[in-house]
Image 1 (cartoon, rainbow, N blue to C red):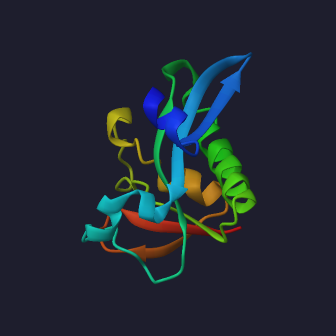
Image 2 (cartoon, helix red, strand yellow):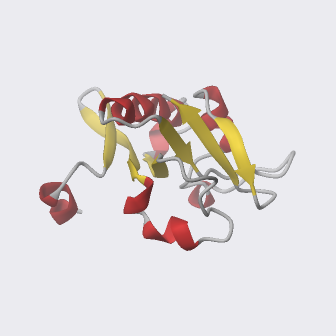
Length: 135
């Protein structure tokens, strides 16, 4: 990770609480994440250029406090500053009345994306919507 940070554009954003890093999200232009182009479920919706938010980490004591939504807002602002017009994410949408273990929601929850102003652009799997926000 240190080499990635030192060699190029920032690979994501860090959220701090009281001067300590407590959360992180990965974002970059979609083409940075080659696996997305070949994924049956997450393949491009269209040919419009997008930035992708692909991963989150929130320290356990800070979970369920809305940090993912705040990171998504910050990611949208950052991507816009870098020239992006669309930010896209690939969250999990748990089945109704079920709870998904934290370890399986590293791509975020669809509810957090909705709270951050993202809308569903495509769904090729019952539990994996592609969410977009114009910035």
